[in-house]
Image (cartoon, rainbow, N blue to C red; front, side, top):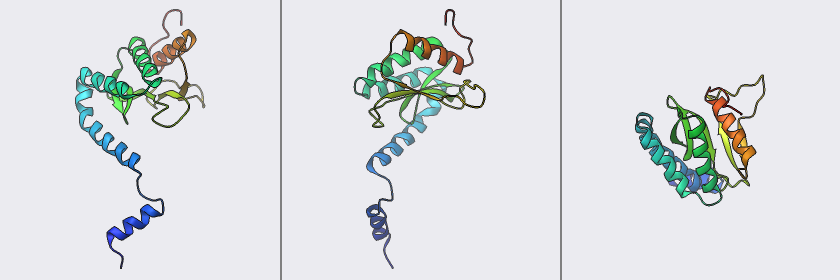
Length: 160
């Protein structure tokens, strides 16, 4: 009978098991869960975590994430910053409403702003839950502001 080490080695060789990146993500998520309760009670804790994650990003994602952070907090100040699977996220009553996903972290050609099922974006039987972001001009800023306000249950802002 094969030993447990032999079985594990066989699974790894067959492409089963977790990659180094997956293992690192699991460790990061476990750490994040430990601090989540503090972040849900103290906005400053969540804000510090989000800003630290943004600071770790490479450009241009760092600049995009920083600007998205500012836009979300200005559009819906009742949303609290927190990290969610190592991404900057914004929550209401501890539940994530929207989040920024770095393109570089996930090996995609663009970053995105995503919305969870907690977001009030329902529009009939089909609606988008994520938006690709390559650059932020006035039109994109207005669209993001309107989306975040709607997602958080706020009326559109004046002029938007």
